[in-house]
Image (cartoon, rainbow, N blue to C red; front, top):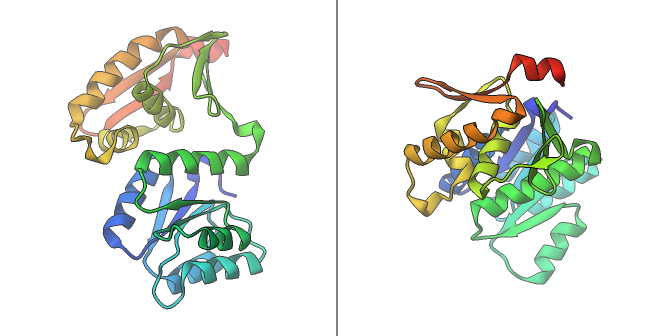
Length: 234
């Protein structure tokens, strides 16, 4: 298992447009992403490199996703696997789960549901001890999706909550505006960078009491930092 800051995801999808969309979503969640478009390449990657999560399409040329999954589990590799399939027949879903998949999504799917299922698999694989993110005086509950400051719940919108999690996962590191945009908004909403700026402005004010600040790094994105006084008190 890689460290949380260096979590590696393998995206296996032969539709290159969809593969790119999924990979972009995973990067927005601060994962390092490898992308392959065939079952043979997936099997080779999983045989030689360690990954923390696999997003695996079933309909692959030559070597399908079921066979990739079967070989993975035969090697006793317990990496969490989320299978993607256009098949809605119950027996196909059952087969995937019986072969060792941890969850599945039926195409077409919503990117926010993909993110939610990925978060759930990561939490499950890390165990209960990793169900919280902490910075300054703030505690973010990944299960309940709540942010608390010294026992008091912060009132956050769904968008603010998404942005907060993305920034908390990379405290002290710059997160690009495009990554925040893709991680917190639907692909078809047609929103622009100004939407992120507005939400960041609101979130910034709410985090003062938590001892956290969000700095704008011109031309790059945003950086969350723990204020020194808060860091000493924590």
